[in-house]
Length: 102
Length: 102
DNA sequence: TTTGTTTATGAGTAATTGCTCATATAGTGA
DNA sequence: TCACTATATGAGCAATTACTCATAAACAAA
Image (cartoon, rainbow over all chains, first blue to last red; front, side, top):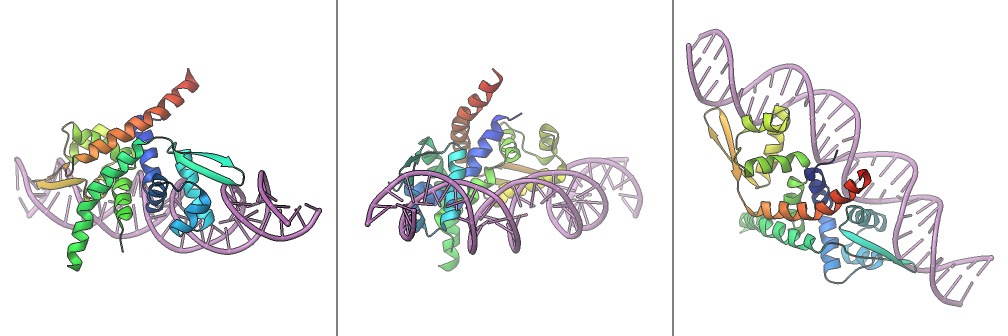
């Protein structure tokens, strides 16, 4: 039996990876095909493809075919709110790291 | 070099586990010591201790000693906003699961 | 001091993750 | 048809994760 916590964890796990966060940021600003994402992020094609699959399976992205291309878009825009909060919390850590080099 | 996405991922990873989500929910409603959390969640003591450590190291929880006990509290309350959004998104999945049994 | 209580951690393990290389699949255009 | 392009996926690998059992460490109370 899956509880709410299990489903919450699935969603959170799907976005808890630097490359998947970068993918979502690119999609946020209009890049929405595998072929554009790979060079934009410097990711190996098969690696990118698997990350995208994780995001689709978790319900965060929706995908559709258009000829050879596969396009992606956000299925639930609330995920960006979630990422923004994570970014705000992360800022504290980022500042602490910067102090070391100051 | 750590980018924002790396730090975001660290925060998200820390909360991307069902047991850590349950821990945060218990702390949200006042249970704040290791010794109360273990029975409340049915977790093995050493396992719980390691989950708590992950939450402290990520900066989500703060801990302090009080005699034998270690108490925990939320360091950044925005994490609950984040969990609430994840719960909202997860609701869609939960409903889909329920349909199967309906 | 001795005994008990609470938490932390070392060691070991099975399962999972993220990655790469190679290959398959599917559609495009000459 | 035959190349070419874009994406998906099998196989294999090193690293990490979540967990348990056993033990250590730290403090409390008799």
